Image 1 (cartoon, rainbow, N blue to C red):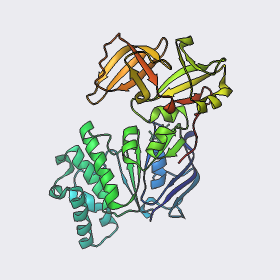
Image 2: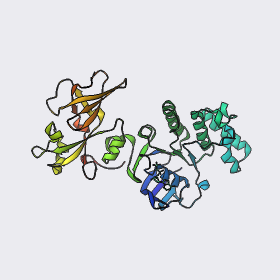
Image 3: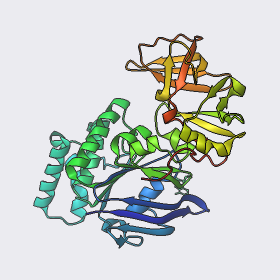
Length: 370
Ligand code: ADP
């Protein structure tokens, strides 16, 4: 059992740098939770406070109901895997993995059993006699994970563990860490700036910005119900399109580009947008929700100029320009576009989002965390 609870956690570094503000996060037993956000948003600081590598300035940290604020790192039963692997260069793989157990005075036979077991799980049995410099990046990463596994910790913490690997290896290690999570049945907290890692690996995502938790939920919940424009734009690739539009005085239509396109909201959206009549809002639409039509649709047509075409094989991303704004659409590779073409698209209004211009909060959505 290992449940991690952060209650009102904050961190102020020397010199009054506020890195984390009032974080309230629950990581359930055996959950895989990813903290994601742009560089400098406070993810690593939060992780390091859980590990005990940073003092907690405000709030309370509980592991399995026990207050951890003043418990030294070695007594928290947590293992951390770092971005730079932090392997000892002069030691063999075996000794690197055994080191933490040796300093805890674990019995020699038990150390051997645990190291061999971890090496088997990670498929690095043949590398046990090598030094780190004789390993590839992916192999070093496995040794760093192995060193965490042998400790049999309550909680695994990962701080951007894949960022030093090339793109192909990252995809492979992503799957390996997910698989490891299922096999070890352990609680894991993983920090990354990469929203694809967050989407593909986690049970639950914590999105952070400027030291503040923005939203917590399952990957698909955040994708479908972002609480604000930041989360909407951060989760998903290519990101959601945002257009500045006006809600028209007659008919409550969504008018963009001083009238060059007019879109009819769904009945439900219209009810909420009533409060915004005459005002500007952000209209949010994901690339896959821009539907291509060979001829202009009778309603909700958006006619735009093709500015860039990105054929990716399984799909084609088309960059389109309205009079004053730009949009990305994800279409089938069967649709052929040339730069400079005029193309017609219709937004799938069931999937459209609206955000308040000032608060940037989602307007027409059941806004809640999950
Ligand atoms: P992230 O992991 O999301 O990139 P960090 O947690 O590393 O972000 O940093 C959050 C903020 O705290 C940043 O503004 C960073 O500059 C600041 N910070 C991090 N470590 C220190 C430190 N030791 N002293 C002062 N400020 C720090």
